[in-house]
Length: 175
Picture (cartoon, rainbow, N blue to C red):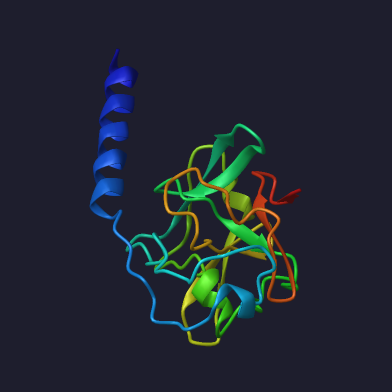
């Protein structure tokens, strides 16, 4: 009974937090879809729903996806991705790339949520001095077209010199 109460309370808190943070703002970038370095049709970039760092460290957890199986999400349920063009833990996504693929940032040590492995979590320092979360040796990113928890619209997108994949709890690209 106590676990049911905890689960219900946690679900309500996540719902309220998601609703409070759910608004997005359109970017002033002037890239048109035809000029976009992303090969799939993409609208102009908008502010990421969740790129801001958490005070105690970003949380990465596993969630079930009907088509892709178990994938990684942040503490708000937003899907996180890896960039196949990244080499090791260093990000290669800068300039216009971050308008479409904002990095998962943290202030503090990242936290392993349900289904994620703490031993695979890490960080890397970006060229602007911000700290990006890594998992299984891969820097993590959001995709601006994912506007609600559980969306995976960035899966398999080819852009900025490589493919983008959701991440499994084992730290591998889900293809």
